[in-house]
Length: 229
Ligand code: DC
Image 1 (cartoon, rainbow, N blue to C red):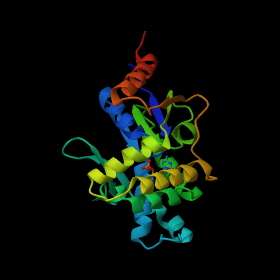
Image 2 (cartoon, rainbow, N blue to C red; image 1 turned 90 degrees about the horizontal axis):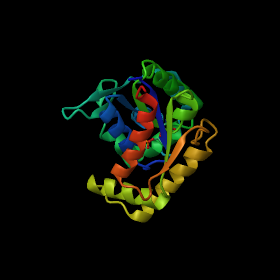
Image 3 (cartoon, helix red, strand yellow; image 1 turned 45 degrees about the vertical axis):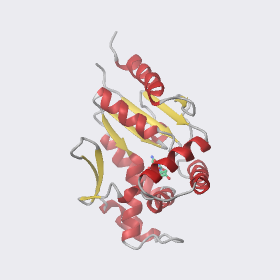
């Protein structure tokens, strides 16, 4: 069976990482969460005092971003977790504070160039499913399968709220919806690699699809490209 690159892009909380993980597990590919890489850089900047609520010390971050070693290692259940300079930061990078920081550092060209270079390196052997915002447009414009995942802001805010509440964060629907809308605005309107659908990407709106219905669509597209006939 031919090995390919699967590039999955979409808005925050669109369910793209669930889709990407599930596909990678089914077909035995490596899953790479590029959002986690931007989150790890944000955490690195926060911890070193280079990013505060209202400013980023761009010079310091530019100088040191190359020293942030970001790795993915499987935990006991086989799920991939994010490590920053050898430390497991999987829980910490999922907070709302780090999510907002990631959205801010991801607007910086020098951060994007560094992470895109690392992502391209990870995909050299193919056999990967990578999700993010610019995978089909910038990181792997030659990817064999490109998916663009969407869902309405209201559906995404509801999913995100349930996720955060399950983790014990007390958040209201209105607060989460405002955060979703603000992140959409930043992701689509930034000057550097804004989120957009690649011309040859297949769009999947999952507002009204179950997880399994969505997987059936993805499985079919993947098989069309990889099963030798
Ligand atoms: O997918 P996520 O919520 O974990 O992403 C965190 C932030 O990083 C989000 O604001 C968008 C940004 N991002 C990006 O600009 N490019 C990527 N390839 C992945 C994420």
